[in-house]
Image 1 (cartoon, rainbow, N blue to C red):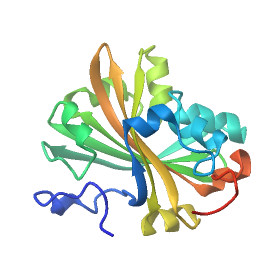
Image 2 (cartoon, rainbow, N blue to C red):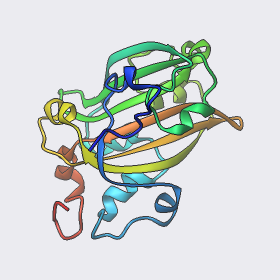
Image 3 (cartoon, one colour):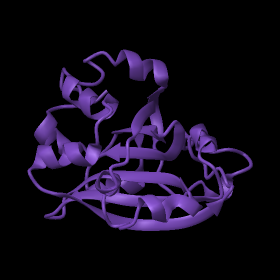
Image 4 (tube, rainbow, N blue to C red):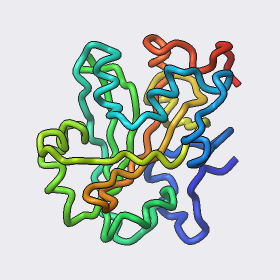
Length: 207
C-alpha cells in the first residue's frame, strides 16, 4: 500500500517526513463520534481525540518532563509536501518542522511534523527546542486544537526510531489562533505508551 498523502505532482517530497501507510483512517466524523472501544480503548481515545496538549499529557503519564529533539526545519515554499489537505489552510511560504517527543531520560514517545507560515515561525517558536505547547504557553497564546483525522498504520522508519513494532496510531489537527489557522500538526504515538495507557484495543488485540 502506498503512503498516504502522496500526490502525483508532489512525489519529490514524499519521503521527506514519516507518514503512516494506513490500515485504517477516519475523518472528522470519526473524531467527533469516537471509535468503538474494541477498535481504540478509552484511554487512547482521550490522548488521540482530546483537545489537550499531548506533550502535557505525556509528561503527566510518565512523570518526566517531555523534551524535544528537532530533526528537521525545512523551507518548503508553497509545496504541498504530501501533507494532509489542510496544509492549504496554512499561509505560505511554509516551513516544515519535525521532532521526536521523548522523556528526559531518553525514551521516544511520539513523532510530530508541523507546517508553519515561514514568516511567523520565529514569533511562536522562540526556542525551537521547546515543545510547541511549552512555547505557546509562555506566550499566553490562546489556541483551539481542531483534530481532523485519525490513522492506524505502518511505518518502517518509525518502527526503527521507536524500537517498537507497528501498527501505530496517529492523527493530524489544525491549531487555530484568533480565528486563523496557525499550524498543521501530524503526530504518531509509540506503542511504548501501553505501559501507561494499557492496550490500544479493549480486547487487547492487534487488529
